[in-house]
Length: 323
Image (cartoon, rainbow, N blue to C red; front, side):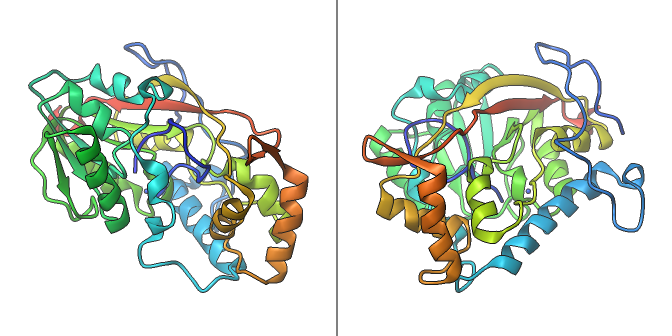
């Protein structure tokens, strides 16, 4: 479920799955380790924890927190069913520089693999720059939107693979990438290693500096009385790649736009889902109060107050398996 940009209601970017300091070659820049305060490893010091272990622990901890505070019936069979239509291909192609940044890595006769293609926000604009896009997408709701978007845009070179990446069978391609997917990956090493093996020229991840749900942080804190645990983002992913032997190049893509929650009624439905709050519960009462405190109405929509733009980056590397 890829990409950021285009006019849509706020839903957050999708999420599924050694020292980092170093100069990023080929138009990248230097990045630093960590994304906020380092959490201690269970039973040991922070320095004893590997980058892979830290990434996976952060994902598990965030998911466990959501389950602990949940007052809804549970996670739907297809998590993305509620959000899928927010991930259509953008009507304004300049809103997201990601497709152009990826297009620079391939030629018109090349194939590319889009892991977690979602509704086609990356695949559809990128398809104009290559021979074929293989769109791997496990969510039925997302695939339905992708099929609609393929038809709407008249695209004929996107092939959909209905599978989780870990089980997908695809032939290698010059470019294999996943955009805004790794945040929720519970086992990052096999995910990255398979992405690496699928790439003959470039492997890439598109990630944010801070968790996609950061604009929800004040609401979460007010509703649940505790801070939302942080998902792994750019710095954690770069640390994982270096630990696995890659030499990642980090290219800034600019900030993602601040997005509205939607009109009040749909904003409440969306935020109940995102904050795991059931209708009529004490948390729901606090959610309504939180909207009065932390959201403002503009043009018929509720927008997060004082939200700061979240920087996006393209993290690419030459496939480790081809050395």
